[in-house]
Length: 523
Image (tube, rainbow, N blue to C red; front, side, top):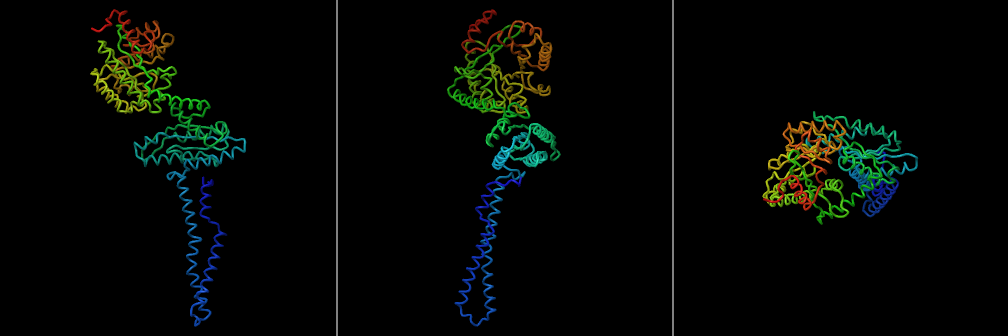
């Protein structure tokens, strides 16, 4: 990396003005002036009694006395200043731990390399590598071990690179690589080598650490024509790798449009939160055996004419942190509605969905307790639903928060069960009262014997563990009849009703109870 010299280092040398010819001229002229002054001074003094040899010795002694400061100010001091300036610049542009270039220097090196590659029919690939295990290592084992791991990873990456490749520390713990003049096959081989060395466990202080990395990749000139765009698009690809939880993502032009759309969506979502442009809809849940309404699932809807569906705006809210403003509103609205129905004499429990981000926020539990207490509702009237994947994101923290919710008397439902990656060991530890079998297993239950077996075995497992079983996605009578033979507790789906706003649900509820011969009016 030292073979690359930056403009800033050149500017520092220029400012220090270390030019040998100029220095020598200054030194010679200064000596001549000093010698003239000495000669004039000696001639003005009464020193006629001294011999010419003694005068020469005195002249030389005086001259040598003044030469030392001259050499210091004109030669040594400028050199020290230049060296110190260069060291400061190098220090500011290199990571102290690894010695690798920081972001600013890397950007400049990328510009230089692009300029070189542009003159030849070659490509340059930019990789952003995020070993996101480093944060956990710092928190668990301390920063000393984290620093050792970072140094080890840097050495491993450097061992795979060619002479003209560039590696940098980029924004904290990320690595940035520029693989110069590569064809696609060479690029694939290099990435494979990097992945191989990085995914090998690292042993530090007798602790074996598994390394998991995410990689974002962009290619010049395929994806960008400038260093700024090349880096930005590699970062977009890296962010997508994190969102999709995949090892590597190559930049796609469609991502740019998606990113622009996302910015618009985020702005509109902020405005919708300010104007409260949302409404809760309620989808009935039915007891399979009795046909009575077991409760409802509260589902948020963006009710403006051009409002986005939940499948789009909920993930955006989670990624941007806006979910912190949405979840309390949902809890408050659901609790208020449950209280209203209770006043009407209707015992209708409501299930509320919370996100993986909410599972890391202890204030959700306290806010829920406050709302329920204010309305004097039994806690069992409010069920908290979390998806299986959100629980698995941070198992221990999720179990702790859900245990707190259970202790307050609320029920806990595990939604989308069967679509995640939980093990039986964690299922038995979950403080849940209910499992919801995902509709993806139900929609083919009549035609796919494997789906039928999965549903049947999941129902048995849940029963053995003491969980109530809810099956989603019941769309028609045939599926309903098949489920009767499998025996879940509660069913939910369009066969009974689509999600309805509060007023429409009241009318549906009255009609449903009348058709079942149950009283629909308050006692």
